Image (cartoon, rainbow, N blue to C red; front, side, top):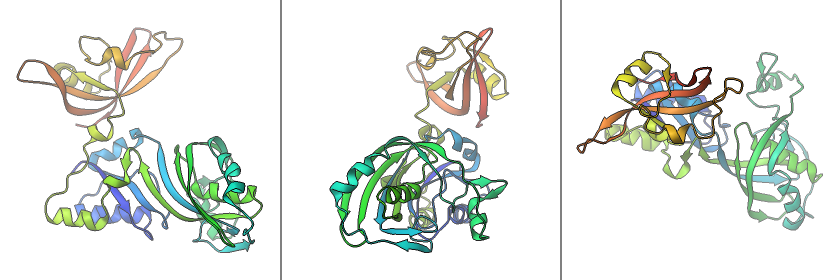
Amino acid sequence: MEGFLNLNKPAGWTSHDCVAKVRRLLHIKRVGHGGTLDPAATGVLPIALGKATKLLQYLPQEKAYRAKIRLGVRTTTDDLEGEIIATTSAASLTVEKVLPYLQQFEGKIKQVPPMYSAIQVQGKRLYELAREGLTAEVPERTVEVFQLKLLAWYSGEFPELEVEIACGAGTYIRAIARDLGTSLNTGGTLATLSRTRSSGFELTDSLTLEELTQQLQQKAFEPVLPAKALQHLPAVILTPKSAHRWCQGQRLPWQEEMFESAPVATEGMELSSNHPQSLVVRVHQEQETWCGLSKTGKFLGIGQVISSENGLLLSPQKVFV
């Protein structure tokens, strides 16, 4: 039971709750998740099982959400789970007025994370400080929003807009809702949130906890194999002899006759030791086919192609076997 589970997190559950539930259902201790979702949010929560917990950091970082933002309302948590601080009628707003402000959140933007978040400041989580009635200076940071698309507009005293957002790691959708409301001088808060893509996993392929339970009862559950989850990384294929040395922790010289994908994997890399670069790759052992040709075989782990004084080396990072 080693690989990944594409879980559709239910509302009202913390990410830790989901990990604990999966641990009980599968009867394994090593379970981790790839990116926290707020309790009120639903959608894709990547779960790593067994040794795959070592591979979470190598999954794709891009995420996508479907969110509903309510204007005219400010809350302590920047979503409807928090206490309402203030309300301002925003009935005069129209989609035409809001759209130019919404477009300002595309690209690389500065963002202050919500006070109720898991970010650590001075050794404590922000939400812990907030619950104690304490405040802290939350450092601004740069995040990237690749695409922000308006899906629907609902007019009223507290109008709502439904949006689709594709973004990089560390982006808080609650902060976008809050900052949009600030720009419009009405206040804003997140009404609903669903993560539709995370770490390469799509909502359409996800399993609910009920579906997971059913599959386990029918002995039909199969985790997503690491090689499939990491297919965005270039593949390096080793001979059995080289694979044995690599799995023992040895750095191997980069030779095209040993590495089937070498010309592609190292394209554009600087060979000079004055400009060290590295490339993360997934490592496989070659598998012989009936016609004598090799192909991608057993997944061995994650390697890093690094430049040195003696040329390129393949260094083990996470050995999976």
